[in-house]
Length: 115
Picture 1 (cartoon, rainbow, N blue to C red):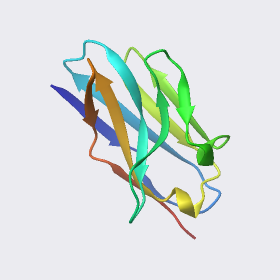
Picture 2: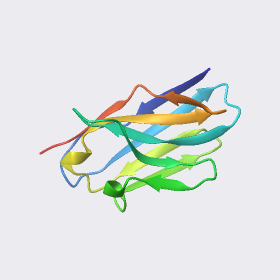
Picture 3: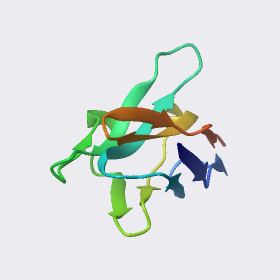
Picture 4: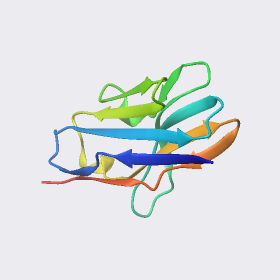
C-alpha cells in the first residue's frame, strides 16, 4: 500500500507565493510518475505539473513560468513552488503518484488566492 500526503496550502494574496510538498511512503517499488493536479470549484480536476517516468516535466500552459516542480527521488517527495499566484489558481491541489502502474492520490490541500 502507498500513502500520499500533501502539505503547504493556504491563503495568499495575488502575486504571492506558496510551496506545496508531497511525500509518498509505503511499499514503493518504482515510481512511474509524480505530480500535481488541481480542482477549482465547479470545474474538473486538471493537471498542473508532473514528472513523467522518463524524468520529463509537463506543465499546464496557465502556470508555465510561474510554477516549478521539483523532486527528491531518494525521499519520494515532489514539491511545487508557486509564484506570482493569481485568483484563478484557487482550488484544491492533489498530489498524484503512479507506482507500478497504479495511481494513488493524496487527500488534497486548499490553495486560495484572494485579496
